Length: 333
Ligand code: AMP
Ligand code: TRP
Image 1 (cartoon, rainbow, N blue to C red):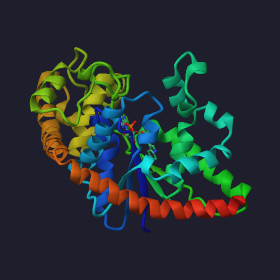
Image 2: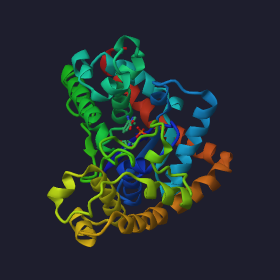
Image 3: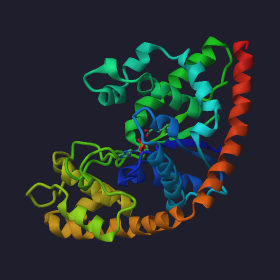
Image 4: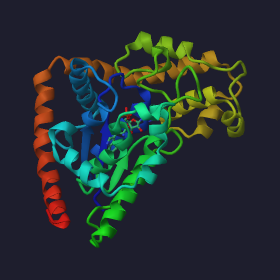
């Protein structure tokens, strides 16, 4: 069966190895399968749920498009566009917010983490963020959504919203119930400074992440400084599970070499971190350096990046506006 793929990335700067291994690398594989129809969205409406500097937002949008293309997504084959330019997203988000239940949203852990202690002061967009995400996905009859593990709960909510709409209006399969595509084993890349914290764009210390724009020396330096424990590398999966930093670095290594954990453990069991880190550094540089050079080159050509977005928006708008029209008919507007 042909898959309809949809995914989104926020243009909030500092795209990192976690975004790449958890999401973008899968986008590329899906794009390369000729049977798939793929849509990759730069979700700028999601980005403004936290305060953004308009000039920086604009350049982050370009950087996200450049990263998609530099990583290997072909804009001739896949649709690349930015969310704010296709008004169906905002409209469908409002309509779906009249379907979703407060109780469902109250369970979302990302909101709890991002809102912190003082929920009264959080903006409403941050709270209803997953409803907009559901709109993104459902407007395109998406069958599969590649994301990192942190987005699993939002995807379950999207499925619930779709199901409830179909039930409420008694139209079977009006919204397609999408399947998450989450890479097993390596779907959550952790900070290089703390194996229990997710690698994140917003972490203050730049040493905590490998940015997709880092050069060779920066990558080598960050891996060298990555936190480890003092023991040699483990020989069993059980032992690895108890050592978060070792597990994370081994996970990155395994993911980039397409090895299982088992195979990587066999390769390094009993060796010390410095030897492993040298190997890891080479592997990461090998994969990321060509991407980072290509990103820099593409960022010099804003006209090209704008053209990709404009063409993508036209195609996305054609699909999404038809779906919204049908939604209007169903609702009685
Ligand atoms: P965001 O930058 O939050 O828009 O995330 C874009 C994509 O990257 C989503 O599919 C996330 O699930 C994924 N992602 C973000 N951080 C990580 C991480 N540390 N490990 C794995 N995937 C991640
Ligand atoms: N919420 C996702 C994230 O932060 C981004 C996103 C927005 C998304 N809309 C989406 C991902 C639709 C997949 C499908 O990572």
